[in-house]
Length: 126
Image (cartoon, rainbow, N blue to C red; front, side, top):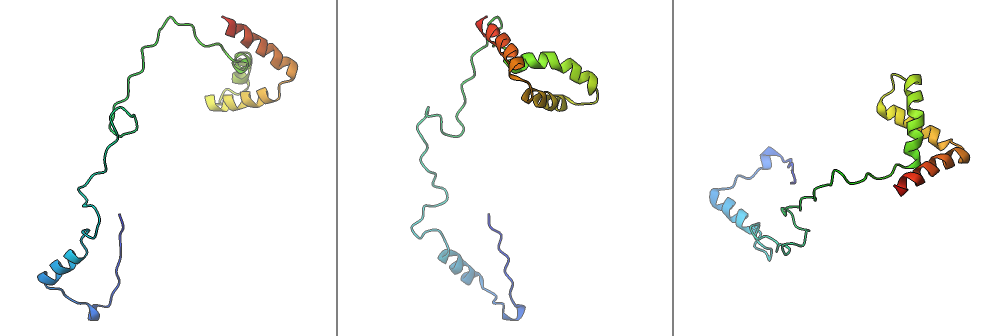
């Protein structure tokens, strides 16, 4: 939507009669080779999944007894580090603790990371 502001001198303003207004409105109508506003573009075929208003398929029910995905090495590291971080930073939020743990993970040596990666590999096998 465009908002136009016209600034003009009141002394030079022209007052149109109703007939002149109708003539001006018909001259600016969209009949100059354009489709009327009521015409709608052709809709995509049903079932293509790209149109608006189509319902999504409901996701399948999850099996509650299915095995969970294995933990990553980082999550095993978090299990070891999180209690100490909470004691040192009791006022820190969950996001703050996560940032601290991520900084620690970046600085962990290769040997320590290998230990957690072995735990993750064993967990993947289950």
